Length: 207
Image 1 (cartoon, rainbow, N blue to C red):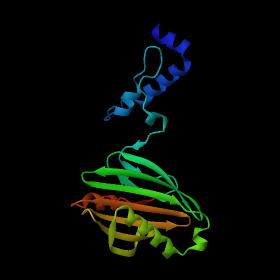
Image 2: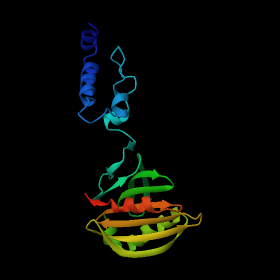
Image 3: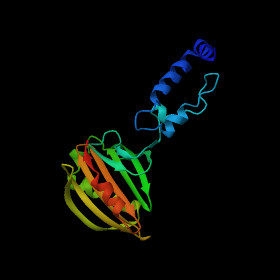
Image 4: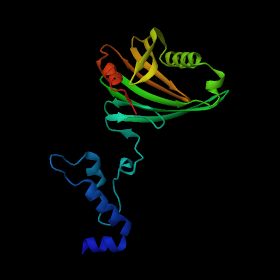
């Protein structure tokens, strides 16, 4: 009787409930995820009481695994839950939009950031200058000095390798990739142990 009432009066909620039931069906050897369990909290009236935005594809965090902001030509494995951030910057060539995914593990902080450069950038500035500008901005952000800077290659893409040391004692390793109008920066900083940061860089794959 209850199911018939919900179906008749709240057809959308009934469809959503059925969909969530299929989503959370226990598979052999697998449990029901915390997100899925939370998503199943539907009241007797058919109203959703606690449906995480992750179930609608609007989440601000992503579980550990291969991740890359839209437009990136590489992916990385971000530890823990990745937080997505977007920022814009006005330049004399136009607006630059940067999308970052950031994660933490212990004292290590890692991130992949993708920037779409103005279309005239590659015509008005050399590759060397664009890499140099990105490097200086990163160092300013961390109040750091460069301790290593060289050409490198990772996951089939040419890049620039940067090591830096900040005034507060933290250290960092970054790789900068530039292809066309897209600049991708894979960066990690740490206090003492760089294992997490190195593992983060080692997870880089071509998308």
